[in-house]
Image (tube, rainbow, N blue to C red; front, side, top):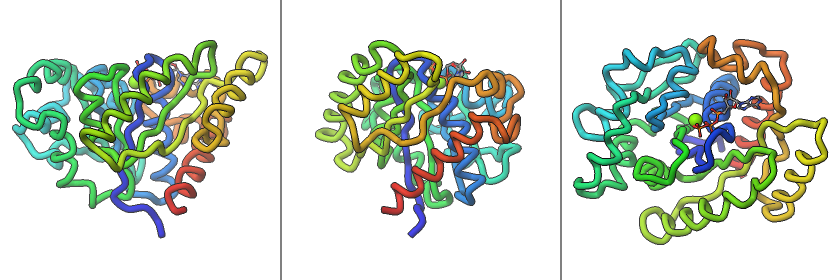
Length: 258
Ligand code: ATP
Ligand code: MG
């Protein structure tokens, strides 16, 4: 059975670990594999939005308007230039919702309710989270069936995971019992250093079943692609980064089927 209506949050409160790079490129690779894919950008930095070629300063209907109930999420969704990949864009004003939602009823469930109207239209929905465990990330984890955790291959990679795992535990207990760890993906692997391999071994040792076999290499091409507003599959389809994200998509699909 192929997945349908699966929602996966891409989260890690540590900044700059490859969440957005993974959201864009895994999303593009899933679409290339025939999955109807939606990427929901819930980070006020709106890097997934701009990385897919959408001018974040000109977005009029964003996830923000949907969360505060002004519009339906469906009316925020746009098709990207990459076939099969749709985007619910963010906007800088989403930052204000952290404060605005404090007084709202069921504030942790607003994204889930917005998504309910559209998830059936997609096989897979990915949610790109900001580097925090604030109310927007809590909304993403409450709406999700699973979390994908990008982990940068660097010193102390494991330290930051403790807080994230305890948050996942709290979300399961209080808001979303079905939340699973869909996988951990090691990113920015630099094969020239021993440290990178040590970090991979270390994280695998702790989470043998969670870590994906696919490791995303450190690659300048991956870091360049967003400034052209394109996924790596469009910008440099033969690159190592593109190959890694295609493999990661295959691995994820195999996990979702089993
Ligand atoms: P934030 O926490 O700010 O949202 P993030 O976790 O979304 O950050 P990214 O924006 O994906 O992280 O990546 C951080 C930086 O590292 C970006 O400049 C990105 O282009 C670069 N980067 C990400 N993955 C790779 C990679 N595999 N190789 C080289 N550069 C990468
Ligand atoms: Mg990001």
